[in-house]
Image 1 (tube, rainbow, N blue to C red):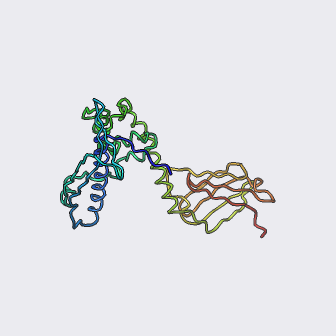
Image 2 (tube, rainbow, N blue to C red):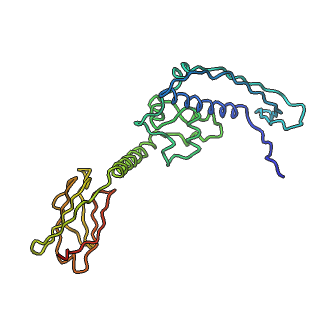
Length: 270
């Protein structure tokens, strides 16, 4: 059975990872404090590591001691306690609905998101604030993640301006889609009658129109029809009677981008 190789690592990388996990834990407690009281303290936590240090003349790296190995050095870490009051006083407020979380921006590379998270940057607004203060985001990231390329972070706020518009538009579409999902159209009655060469089609129901910023469209076997009236409870359009034909016609009504009614429209035999 093969074993995972015992790779060496830098103390700085370990501390950065540990601090990142502690920040996440503190954020979780901060979220909880918004809707329920915290009645406990996070007590002291001690870690003891058995390690073999390696120095190449420039950097010190460590390897974990394996079971049975002797002669390892010992490093002890002790983390202090923090109370619920300290959590509320020292932890940033959660990202609000008016901010854009970095994890929701698909066009930012995962490694850039991870690097920014390590310096406490969680949203697009955080980046814009840092750049307004003339702080070099790339240099900040380089301090905690030396392998990162600072050039990847230059003008990041400018780059995000274009992404912000696309994100806001996407969220608006999702909200409208959810709104329509919560208010689906209901057709209770459909009538067709002739007026000369035309057929007048009337629908009655509920939630046939929930937005005033969209003009409904109608297609009858691919032929456009004229919408006469569109409201929440009443919808009426006019088309050429011959387009219905003896076998009926395929009717499609785009009430809005998220609701389409489809019927086979026929003349009543009565």
